[in-house]
Length: 367
Ligand code: SAH
Image (cartoon, rainbow, N blue to C red; front, side, top):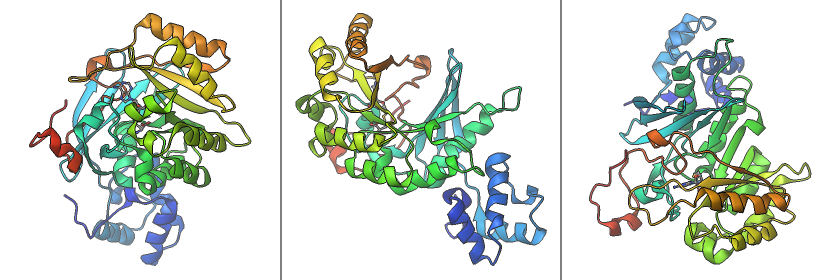
């Protein structure tokens, strides 16, 4: 446990660090000096920051920490994916996944402990919601994964892309997520470009608008259905922000530059995967700069859904493709370590009332 009077520097973006050093009566450039050590070199110990005076090192030790979660599990998949379970200071656990590909290495990070959106096909939803992650807890996932993965022989980092597609709804933890992304984008942080950070949302319309003004990273939207009746069932948030309103907002987000929005579509056998659905989806997306990502459903215990067959997915893909929509079928990775989409669960105690009806006294289960 860290002392609450101490400032966790991982909670602060560059502007926050400059303000922190200002209060100490120090110059602003201390912020970028410390960021270089922390994010560039992975240094956690203030006394190892050799361009900082002994006196300031001592003050930092008194007033600040670089608090990181504890690594409690590190699973390696046969396909090279890795999944970590991190224990936070309050005992809750979250998961992050690294997925290596030929051209890039993607880290999938969590934004909340659990999720409150209750999407019917998602295993995180089954576990309920506990709390938002702090900025430091979001950034820590990248910090720890970077250290644990090491570097390529040429000195390059393995993580080139970050996706906010782990546990939680990032736009319902807006401030902490945006601050964490600023650290990832900062040249003195991880120096990632906006194209290399993707935020995935179930469609929190007002926050998508805010995001466009604040930090317009790549946007992915979990659509999963081609009409409101079906989407209301799969993604209950749709009752608040229906498809038309969501897609209008996506069109605005794409903006003049016509940067495509990615639409995720989970393939559920007999539910949303017919030819009619595919054609309806094409009509829905007319005029929206879109890419579609078909995700074969990843089953988990007690789910009522089944994955669509390979043939069905292929046929659905063909219809979208022939209509001129850039479509990819996501390969399922990390199956053997439960690292696939919608499988991230962590360990935590549900604190939402709605879950109590499920009468599990202590729903601390997976993995
Ligand atoms: N709340 C955000 C991000 C977390 S989910 C969102 O809704 O986008 C990341 C992606 O995994 C989403 O597209 C989600 O719909 C998908 N997903 C969830 N459960 C899944 C499952 N069992 N199989 C396949 N994809 C799933």
